[in-house]
Length: 217
Image (cartoon, rainbow, N blue to C red; front, side, top):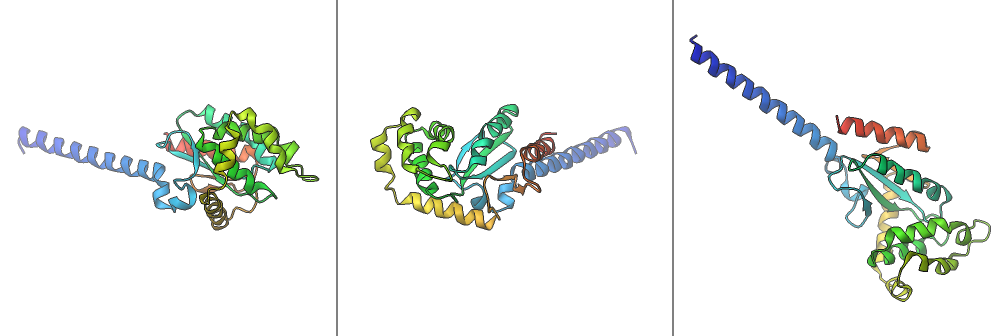
């Protein structure tokens, strides 16, 4: 074997190794960021879901929540802190599981506020005033209207948008997806489609960080 043949052969081997390696990396990356394509994307993160974080994030944190759920309110800031601690790596996907009395009305208010670009402001107000309108002993959901001006929404437009029939369909779809995924209480979390084995913020943080470590080697 002459020197030219040896060099050419070595180059071919290196090229093949590179192509195989690139293919494997691409395949692994597609598994990491494309888990939604492998699983049922419409059940986990449908197009109607409110999200926060980049669409190309490799870790998707799906949260089924109820605006009247005390634990959901307690988890709100820690989840926000988790996103802030890993900028660009997590996409939060909010889904509805309005199990408490009067919660469906709150979901409709959130979606109506979304049309005004005030979704997150309204959610903050709801959680901050939850004890006033969602008391388990004496729920008074109509009291939310006292607090909504704090979110900077147009109240009259908000009330008009509550009649949108698509809101009922959205809620029913989220409830159906929650049932399919085995979500029976709120908040219900899935990280890249994986549920928490044991509920708790420490467990959620650990699972998120585990997925980040695997997705961003």
